[in-house]
Image 1 (cartoon, rainbow, N blue to C red):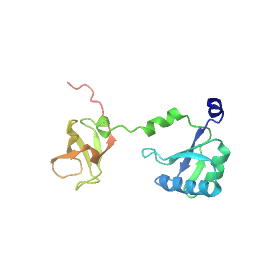
Image 2: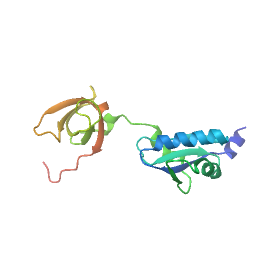
Image 3: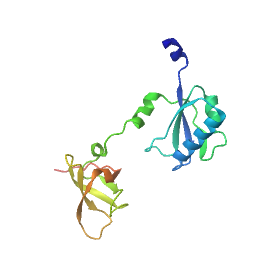
Length: 162
């Protein structure tokens, strides 16, 4: 039985979509696959990769049939995608691991939603960051929970600093 599973090895294919419409494209592909009874095994829509979805199937012919004529689907990327390349999209790192003092972030919730800020202090135990708003007319430090932050730019290394 193990030998048969190895013979029918599935592969992943990358599909280009309209940026911002990845979830809609995936849902439309799923509906079409169910209607035509196509053997798609899974559809992956990574949040951090815009303009692409990944579909798991036994052959590229199935993928071509599933995506043809589907709205927001642009094309199939030539070749196959290795599962090892997709693993980074399956495991999410906590945002606190990516942040550090000096990084530029965007606030994604609360009264300062949409504003850009620079991290001046980071409390990893409480999962809070003290920020300096970049768009404010005066410097006002605010403390925000890290779940409401999105990393925009890492701090640049200071040359010749002491």
